[in-house]
Image (cartoon, rainbow, N blue to C red):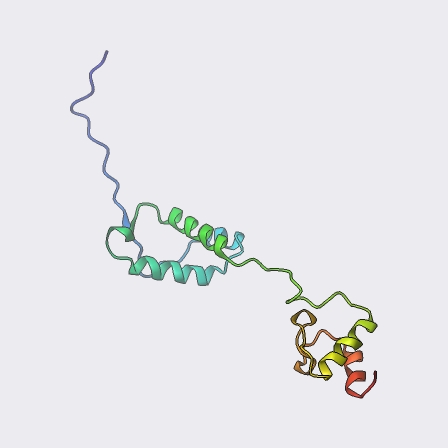
Length: 140
């Protein structure tokens, strides 16, 4: 059995650092964020401002690249997912016969359903333009 070398130098203690105030992501760091679908500039600005303003030991890190990757992953997870719903997509071309009762209900002061899209006078209505033009001219 060998005894430990009592005269060996101990491993140097690694110390963390604060993020430099002029920090910008490296090409590797920017690619990592881009691959997650993030706006690199916006995420980098938020990251830099947060860590520069963080007081005390919480603002000191050993590995800023690893901190950046975790920040990006968390940001990507919190990013709202695009939802496909009846409220943000036009209906899939309902037959013309479905539009006329809706337009009559609307003209009579009836409630315009959100699932029908924006109101006819908005200019962003889901009502096909030809049907809307005929309705405004008094047809049906």
